[in-house]
Every structure is written in structure tokens, then in C-alpha cells.
Length: 432
Image (cartoon, rainbow, N blue to C red):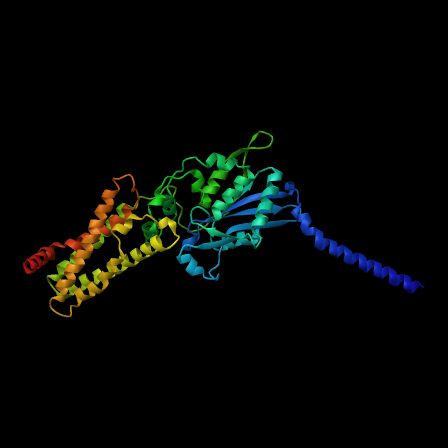
């Protein structure tokens, strides 16, 4: 009888343990979902630039700390993977699919520190009910069916998504203050504040960007950059439910300061004088090559190969510009005045330059010389036309950098004085 009672008690104990485990599995997640706002802390993690081109503009994420569970989550709206299906095809055509997700905050912050990227944490002070609203919003965002979104470099990215969350946390007061406030710079100027230290990338991106990004911005628009979000939330005051004005940020912690990275400039650097100086330096070198033609056959080879190399470079970047402007969704390349003087036709300088350097017969060099000069004359004409067009109110692209680089080079190739008059004389005599 005693053994039967013991067995019965053991079964009841085991059943109770099972039911307790079942309750934990079923109700603990819901307890987390119903955590009062007083137990939640909202933080913004602004991370500095990295070494890869796509990370030059920094990164940003929302951090939610839960005092009850001890869980700190890092909500990231800038997730992408090169392994995604058709990633490079979609990237080429401007169809960039990004996603948002959450992961432990400590490991994310440690990763940024390990790759020498600055980390600055802003602690927000918003009403408890708004903290819950933000938590519910981002938890809904990271669900698989909601996590992906169509990324845009300027209008919908990791930073604008966090900006919008801050507006949600302040009941629309954030956008109310900054939505119409005039910004400091254009999109082009903001981009170049971050790329100035890498001249090739700086020039190429500037070359691709059309006149649409030279329009005036609002402060709200400028927050496509993480650093601009940090700047604005640090100064922002909002009116709480008590009718009293409160600072949005109560604490700013510099977790890590990057070592040896180029700083982001406060103002964009005037770049066209440097590009003009570089263009003149190349033009002087080309002039020296033309001078060598009067002394040695080597000069012809140097001039011809210069045509080919420079034509190949400008032809490839022009081809990229035409492709992106006409056939892709990269709308920041649209309405680009560089297309007037920078054409894929410059690729014709490659075979013509080779023909000039190594002519298969006597008159081949003369033919190549004539066509090359005509090609570069079109560039010169296009540059001057694009400059004159900016006198009209419909054209305002800030492309002086591109014009000043190409103009001295094209002038020498088209009108090199040692051979231009002689060529004109031969052509005039033969044709007329």
C-alpha cells in the first residue's frame, strides 16, 4: 500500500513538473511581449565609417534593453548578403533588397570595435508607452514576412528607417521640427564629405551623380546619414505628456573611437581646382609626348598609347554612366549633363590610338590622327556646351570637377599645335 501511494505521489510530482515546463514555454514569450515600458530602454547606436566603399557613410541601429529579462537587442535595417539570389544582377540594375533583423547588441558592438569602426551610443528618454510602441513596431518589422524592403541610397536606407522610428517615439514631433527645416548641403556635398580621402572613388561617384541630387535638402532629408541622425537627436527637445519640454537624449557614450581612419569633413572640400591641376599635369605630359614625335618614333608610340589608355578609361566610365542613366533604377544618375561630353564613343580611341602608334601602312597614322582629333574635339565642344547650359534655370548640375579634369586633356589631344596646322593643311589640300 505504501509503495502504491509513493508511486502515485511521484506521478503527481512528474505531472506537475511537466505542466510547469509547459507553462514556461507557452507564457514566457508572452510575458516578454507584455513587458511594461518602464523596463525598456531605447538607445541609438551610431557607428562610424568602415574601410569598404559601401561603409564610408557609417551605420546606425536601434538598441532595446530589457531590464526585466536582461536582453539587449540590436535592430539593424542595413542587412544584405552577397549570397542572395541574383544579388549582383539586382545591384547592377538598382534593385537593392535589404532587410532588417535583430541580434544580441553586445556581439554587434564588439564586432564594430574589432574592425576599428567608431561606436557612439545615444540613450533616449521617451514615455514608457512610446517605448512599448517602438518595441512592438520593430518586432513586427523583423518578422520574416515583413523584414525585406526596397533599399534606396538616399530616401530609404538603414538611417532613414531609424529616423522614422525616432519620429514614432516622439509622436511625430521629430518630423514636425525637421521636415521643412532647410538643410546645410546637397546630397552630392554630403556624399563627398565622406569620400574626399579616396580621390578615385570620389571622382567616379561624383561623375555618375546627376543634377537631381544637387537640389536643396531639408534637415529631414539629410538624415539619410547616420551621423546626421546623431547630430539632430542630441539637440532635439520634445513635449511630453505632461506638457513639459524634455531633451530626447539623456546620455551620449563614446564606446569606441576609431584609430587611424580619415575624418568625415564638416564641410565638403572644393575639389575642382585639384582636378584642374591634375588635368593640366596630364596635358603637359601629353604635350611632351607630342614634342618627342619630332625627335623619335618613340614619341608616336607614346602619343598613340596615351590616346588608347585615356580613351579606355573615359570610355568605360562613360559606358557605366549611360547604362546606369538609361537602363537601371539608379535614379541618382538620371539627368546627368556629363553625358553631353563623356560618351562611350571614346572607346574608339583604343583601336585608333594603337593604329596611330603602330600604323600598318603610311597613311594609316594620318587617318587615325584625324579621327582622334575629331573625337576629342567633340569632347571639348560638349564641355563648353554643358557649361553654357548652366546659364539656363533648368540645368544646375555641380559637375565642374568632371569638366576641369577632362578639358585640358581633350584640348591637347584635339588641338596639339605641333601637328594640328599641318594636319589641317593636308586635309584641306587633299579634299578641296
